[in-house]
Image: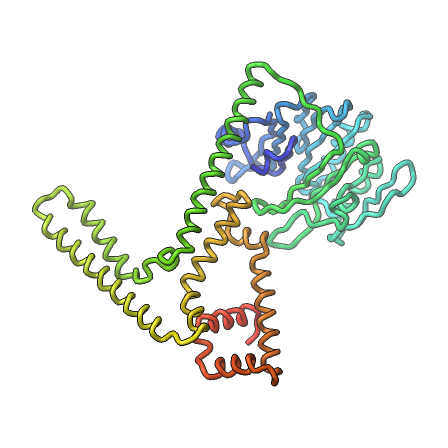
Length: 442
């Protein structure tokens, strides 16, 4: 789904060999035309290294594709009536030879150029924009390190009259990190262009994804890429596929929405939250054994009586647990003497967790996320943990205010009640203790 947002996609360091591509191609979006440079193996054993994939939507004319040079795929598209040369590059280990081959490809061409990919070179804040001998802007970068490969890259860029978009263009003024690995962060992926292209680029930004160590580089044009009207049999087929896919996505979205609404309705009713609080490990084990017996012996009449006895035992166990749970609830209700105790009863710990789970599912639905998206990413993007921390901070400040307050009778009464109860054993007390421990305080 992320790939479908773009008209042109360049993927580098894919590790896809010819055999693997035949399987993978079936999973790739059908509305793209794909060009691939297969990964190669240095030895017979192990996986292939390198590999590149370029995708251009089929309604955009793509021509003059060149992929003979290792680590470089070059092609042309039409933007605003002008031909652009787009080059995807993977310079493994930052080799100088790859830069020389790149120079050979573009030195005699005068069209607009955009070079983008993994250069494996750290350039610090070098690469100021200089057009026609005049310095346009100084480049910024979070990576303050420059290495030999970076110096080679800067030298070639200046010689070819090109400029780096990282840290120079709108939406990436700070020069964000493009690579995050176990050994640390760095800026080794770049988008590079010439003076003619610079004015036609609206923005450049570093995306945020978790599928790989490298972050995506996103270039937005001021003008639209020219599309071709293709009403051939293949073009009509692509159009119908896209239309069918969008209708299916719309139906799924509505279905998920209805299911979620039903769950919310159940959750806000008396029987919805905290259902089967009596169901414990003994009940689960009993149900598992009963199901196993039914699967293995359901057709054997000589053991029917034995299965019936197991059913009776299971039902009696469940009934006993249900009865004990009701008695506990009635006892708790009888002990309630004020409004504070009522809220403690309503916000039982299990119910709180169920509501938090329901909230996360609602967030997933509203953002259109699938079940494969990890929960920690959802919480990070929506800042739910930060909101919880801020709320906890406000509670701490209020508690400090309660300690200092001497005139307010309501606060005095609250303080007396906290001091006279086993605060840490209450549900609210346990949550506050957990908040202290997570924050590194006591």
